[in-house]
Image (cartoon, rainbow, N blue to C red):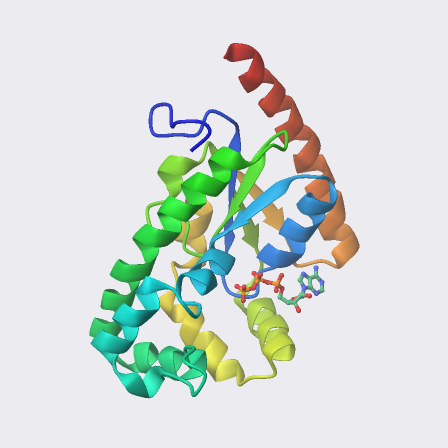
Amino acid sequence: MKNMLINNKPPKLIIGLTGGIGSGKTAASDLFAKQGIQIVDTDILARQALQLGSPLLTQVFNHLGKQLQLEDGSLDRAALRTLVFNNPTAKLWLEALVHPWVKDESIKALNEATSAYTLLSSPLLIESGQTNLIERLVVIDVPESIQIKRTSARDKNNPNLVKKIIQQQINRQDRLLHANDIIDNSGDLNDLQKQVDLLHDYYLKLALIKANEQ
Ligand code: ATP
């Protein structure tokens, strides 16, 4: 690892970004990335954790069953989603396997990032105890009705499934209580861009102050 943690935090400014399903985390992160900011995305890491060849994947097949294995040896992700959706014990087991790996990989990636500050984007940032890695938290906020509309349009799935997933996530008010900054993504993509630009300028200033303190 290039830089070691200082007081459990990477030495550079890390901003956490979270929000409920379909709130616009990816849309917002893409806009920060266009400004040259590196994004560590735990959703991407969680996919990598269970890709073909991963030792974690072998454990999944051994523990949850070979019926989750596709012909080419990879994971049937849809079958796994259905299994954990209906089986809370399996869900807890899977989280205990994947979350620590994702956290370790996130720390590595955060330490290797070279942009002025780095974003840690995670749908479970609050729930999975990753807040000790970040200095500020920006929450992407939209009303539930917009989450349902945008997610079911994007994934072409049933609004009731989206509602169930929202019910399993931290609720909107509790999530907002953890926020240092809030992006209201109930407007159009231009509105989102304006808010990201303002926050980006602010975070650049914070990053400069932090760099001068060290
Ligand atoms: P998930 O939690 O499922 O990973 P997410 O929080 O990353 O979702 P996005 O995928 O960024 O959410 O956004 C959900 C959908 O809404 C996408 O199709 C995206 O293009 C669209 N979207 C995001 N923000 C806006 C906006 N301001 N106006 C219109 N559509 C938007």
